[in-house]
Length: 318
Image (cartoon, rainbow, N blue to C red; front, side):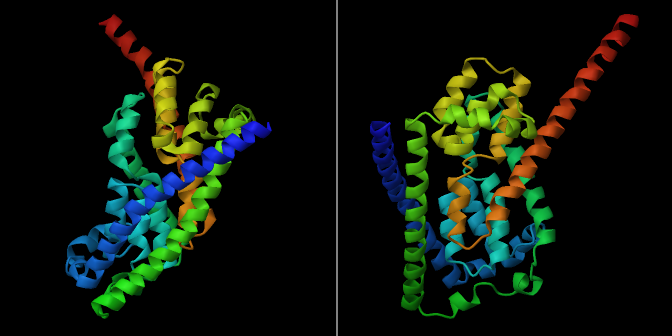
């Protein structure tokens, strides 16, 4: 046990440091370019084009930038853009919920495509779920529409270049320090859990959760892999297990719809805590969305199964 614990600690530290360095390579350039765009006024000039689309999400036009970056690159890129923009806590909450459900869509769509579901279907599903969830959550948040339609980058535009750079460097440094400790804590904990063989025990304990999510017990290891390590980190396990054919098509699609919304349940939401977003909104809405989505999918398949015999009978009578 001591040996496994040591191995887990060292492996977690190595992965944590590697992940932090990788994150810095994304966060620093993207956050600086975002700050530069806000300072230049280009975002402000294009606001009249973007705002009608953002109104659906109860967000200002400037929020389109972290949303787009996050959808194409991932959580780190979205956070990097959010950190340097003048957004309220409520606005950051809505962006966080959207990106937790719909980030890194190209890479993760390919991963899902290799392990049992059409990537376009998986991606569209995630975007629809993210949009609907944000629209519902916005009802419960105190969204200030006067702030939403105001010139959101005016405080940045009013500064000269070097004060803007100093402000960006200070905000980015604080964010990097917070994220460093979050990443280290999470990855060391996960590696220790892996080394001492607790994952299967956690899956067994989590059987009631699987039932609540509408998933079969056979999907337990795959769901837990995605929930703990994410689609990218857990891709090898997900693809390998799916190719073994232990799950039939409906079970596999239900799994993918659930983990598309609900993966990396520890690391990704925790990163948004560094921006002051409430833990409740980071974890609960997408859990509820995943449950509803899988239940609706199962009900849809149930209706299809009921219709098929009826069609056969009509064909025979003819």
